[in-house]
Length: 407
Ligand SMILES: [Zn+2]
Image 1 (cartoon, rainbow, N blue to C red):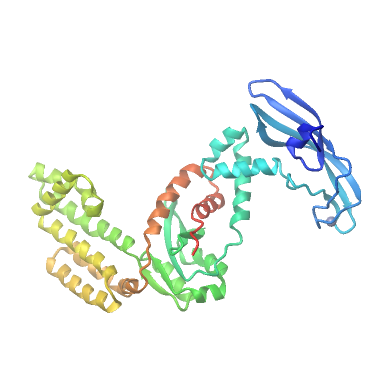
Image 2: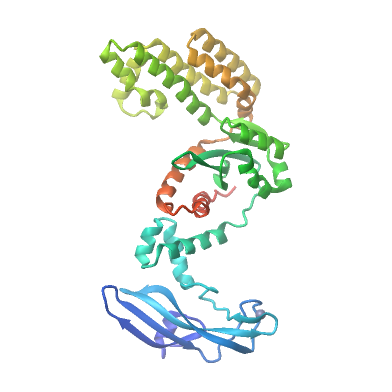
């Protein structure tokens, strides 16, 4: 091919040349390119990759290619099946068109690149393709890029659940927190639901695991202990503190508001302080919010107590050793008991069985804030790629969003 035949040269449909081109006007203009065989091009069997001597039959296909200028582009291509001595009748191998693809390889690659940043529906509109075609192209791209997963350097894990859709259906995400990589995503949050991950990790991989961070989820802990004999279970700060917020701070705030039911103004101040009380003080930006928080705490002794004890509880994870964490814990429990606040005493009692997993965190210092980041990102992906009720595709998108940083 040369400048004598510029259309074929530009198009790069290897093994073919352009015979005719048609432009069809309309609301959406179309360009139709009709290809014929390039004389002398090699004939390769797609099954074995060997040269094949004879053609078995020819069938005409229409595939989509990248748009040309303003026009949607169709390519009419005669597809040969070779008579391969080894494989029998097989499609001819082409460099630019996969076996049963309805779009050229370069169009599929462009679709894939856009799908990494845009919702499927937008990509479909952009290329004038059906959304199911776009989703199939993207699914194929992700499966090739992400499978089989590579776990050989993984020594620590973090696992968490997230809501799959409304109505309490859950999924589990397993992460390598050191490299911020999503290793696995699966439906459910029960012991048997996460079993496929450990099967995939294999016996050697399971034996390599030294620590697993998680929420206080008995099912996860049981499966980890059964599969990974050298792993310690760690309860991470993020989940414990979130639980403290729900079970202690919220409870005390509601009780205080009820107690103040005859003082409407004071009651309203307490009732509307929820987010201020649950947030980290360092993340509160506005000066007036700091003032409000201080006022609420100063006026309500119980709230002040549970607020201060939350920060002291966080301190357990920063201790220099498990022994120091245990000492701090005993101190903390005594204060909780002395407070005589029922919600706080109840929480201290419930947390006690998890102490070993909190003390172990001082050794491993896993930064599980990655889980919080992944949870937020999952919500975005859900809006972008979901709505098709295709969990497998959704899970691939989550893995693709956290490919990991090099170790
Ligand atoms: Zn063959």
